Length: 237
Image 1: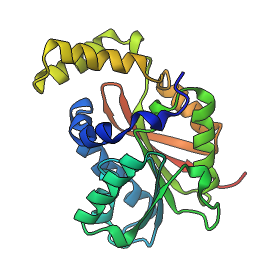
Image 2: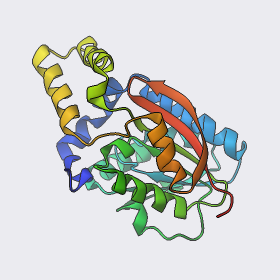
Image 3: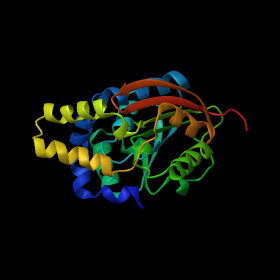
């Protein structure tokens, strides 16, 4: 079991993250664009929203894309990996967005619960959490920091890897298509299988959301094992 999911995101992993992510997820940029579009549709155009971004380290793509669509939005981004957060800070500075984004090294639990956020984004985090208990705890911490009925974009891998050999073979071909040789492809697939287990199905994702204060999830993007959904914080307890 992975005791500290963030530990694997060291400096070397952070530096390769952007390129690797765009290979590993066909439609990486499209997922971020649609996430921003879904949030804007849920919040209303030109809203003065304050957005929580969980696991924002790396390319900061979800923030940069959303910020360009909605120039009045502001963001609080939290990530437990210092190398990944440093990389995000660099991308945000390059995009001229540092004044609209507060970045915090730590976890969602480190943030104040008040004032509540108007929305949240959590992309590529859930499947790195090693067990259902930690998945539930993380989602619950997000839920506690959202206003009633606030939209929540969540995206990541789902389905059990070993139960989907055709999807695994297609995923391997994705790496091969991008120039990886046989040994590199095998290494990539081996690393995936040794990592944390994602939710076993879309129903399992919905169950996690329902148990942590969210409702009405709608899937708006899919790519092999990857899915992206918009849910709502329950309007009342």
